[in-house]
Image (cartoon, rainbow over all chains, first blue to last red; front, side, top):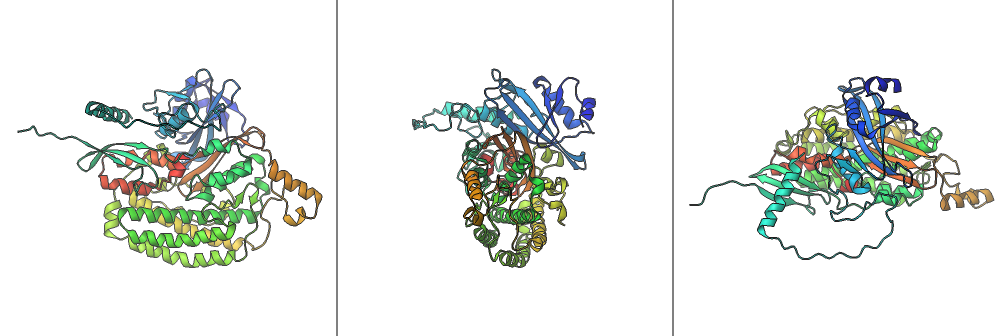
Length: 184
Length: 395
């Protein structure tokens, strides 16, 4: 399995890791992430065409603080890999610079998953066209998925002024939202 | 005379629209009746279950995960139990009877979920009576749940290490009665829709996705099978003894809303087949857990008569059990596609991280791709065909 990967992936970009559940696991260096992912998806012998999920884990106080797990699968269906197989790709992300390159160009499915990564763990996904909060309200403070985020807090009740926008602001707002959704 | 010009119109749909399957908000930009752009907003049902789970003991998480995908509750708990059992290393010790009961429950859950999916999908397109019929049949499945565990929608009957208790008296009769009644009823619903000209006009060639797109968007499940991707987790990576059951994986090639409807219909027929095989195999009385009293509570008659059993009982309920360190992901075929929990354990009696791979999350994400360029009336048909459950999307 691992000798297979050495033949196809850029040298020095990954290392083998142990896994408790028997799923083949590799660590990929952050700067090689996108090219590695592209190779994993496109190499005919590998053909990990399906990105099942992106999971961010916060290992505070360890450093590097975060690990991001990409669960990949080759489906064994015609055109999507010869055999049914799974691969777990892990990336270490340091706590003082929590950022990652986007894999949106490799799998469109990564779009919302990367937004969730930002929303929950505050891991910035560079070059993502639409990096906004997704599950939490837009004006939420802090990143609830982090281990140092307090579990039981009483937020003061927020009150809002009635919305007063001029016609120009209204149009500008709609235009901004259109631009944002056009980018991808 | 004023200058003639055309401009697009922005229409807000939701978050309380009756046909958005929960609280989903779409901002549609329309040129006439054509959708030219859309923006999807989710998060209205976010309850932070994944964060809450980090505070709970392993066994206490089962009721929580059932509330994520509230139409396929027992699929979620099955996925969670399988993942934890793999980390515990007790998979091989699971009695065959428990595996068969789990398969039966998962398939009944699939039927219940598809019935709601089909019923609401038809309701939104205008076939109101189908919804009434589907909910009538689902009621029988909820009665079976009530019989099992006292709860109708979230029974929490599956537990890590087995089942909560043995099957109730009369369970086999209830399931057999349902399985005898249901196939005929299913053909009735199919008769109302499959050759119905209005249904076909509303669903054929609507919301088409190619194979490459369905895989790229992560829509592995009924939506991918509707475009000919022959992949079913029950076949590809069998779990809980699915490799011993006979069933077909339905495939269609068109990839439109109608093809997805046909796939789900055929999946229901196959689920009935699996249920019939499972109920034959399950003896009415027998082992219902792995009988490892570090994980599951000892039987009550021993608890009341033996000191050691009482201590074990107390430990299981107060401290729970510890799970070896590591990460685990076990996919299962849920009603909406590949469904699985990524769990991370640090070796204590509470999980370090729990994350659901929610098929609806990915289906919801692909909605703009399917509706842009189509008519506004098709938006409703497409959302129905993705069968999204907002509890699953927002978690």
